[in-house]
Image 1 (cartoon, rainbow, N blue to C red):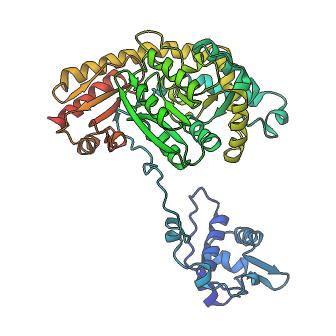
Image 2 (image 1 turned 45 degrees about the vertical axis):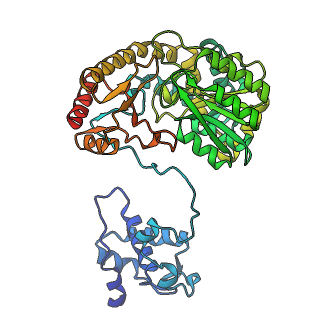
Image 3 (image 1 turned 90 degrees about the vertical axis):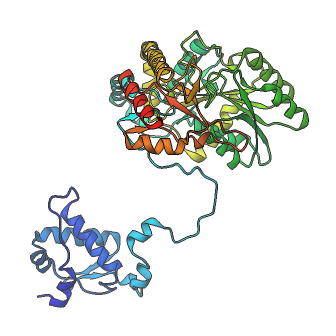
Length: 493
């Protein structure tokens, strides 16, 4: 029989028989903790399976399986006729060397140095409340989720599984998807593409990051509108580029300011959201679009066109993208299905000249070997059978109704403290609050009442502070919008 002193070390182990994790794995975890804590040392003999099973009131086989698991990991070793021992290979690794701090502390703070870098700080999950006026997201309750499920399942049930899923595919995306997407973009945006002009990415940010990594060098100048999308601007900064912000007025990017910069210094890239500028929602006027293309041809800079909310324009058909009028391959066009269905649906694309797509595909391999080809091909089927087009046509009047309802509420109940224009498209209203309103305090107060809104800090620049928010209307029903504005009114007056 084993020594009572040795058995006493194991007396504190209390398996949870109702837990999902198997009891033998719980026991293995507990023995490993004893080793790491220095309570079991290298070469020390462990209790026999019969004695330990009796102590812990578990089956003897459970103890044997726990010991076997730790032997496979190298923590224990056994000798026929002698028993089971803590591995002799641990040598002089005492408690001090195996665990210098508690496991909880090690999980919180790394033992190595971390460089100080200006990464975005809002990486936590967005708080979930009953009501929300978000950044301008679609309503996933309207998305064709059942159709997606069927299309994805269909991909998995088809023959030739090894050919489809048993090896890596093209980093640019499967040909079937890129061809379907090419046809869709040519039909709806007036582009002139083939599948070779398309790279599948996981969203707009990934597209921006790839372009910055592959085409931007330290010291290059990138120009974009201010206020703008700070996520994009963080990518510019981390590529080593010099970012120059130029004004945005009621007609979009002030292109004349860009011309002045081009005269003074080389510009490598201009980032623009011409359909609905982020965050102010204004559209880039036609003469400015044409001038932007002319300047790109004259000075040789890249136009990165972020196709923000193209599919949701209420007053009339939106102007065609800059890429549709690009005759010299100056535009890299970026779109995302995330903005049409749900932010959780990570599916975007880049459209550019073939040699650019080839370069970006090679750069992509360093970051992400390939995307989800199963999902890509499922989307291709939904594009080819018209599911996506029908969804967009069906939801457009719903979002227009919500826009009208929400803007009516703002005008009726908050006109004394807010100014806004009714957007012609998109999913949010750029709402400028009276300067006396503390947006951080307002955000905190309405959160206590079940409403989530931004605190506006993301739209503040040294040269710009409109005390404004993007208030999204698309992801809430008219009833939910009414309640949201009620909460705002109660917190403002």
